[in-house]
Image (cartoon, rainbow, N blue to C red; front, top):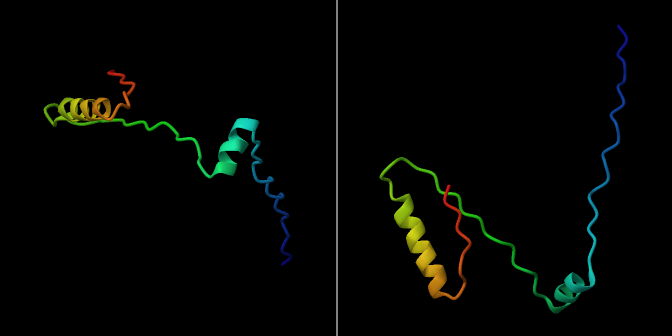
Length: 72
């Protein structure tokens, strides 16, 4: 019985990154720009979702870092 050899396609090249003048300047100084944080809260009724988010909101406002809040 003959076995057929199957050629696997070559792997795609790794993604390349591009830098701009502003990002290369921040990279050379050793500080990277902070990415935004997204918090999604799910839970049963009465679990404390609203209270939790009100406290996070108050904390971030007290730290002079006001959040962008979306209530769906």
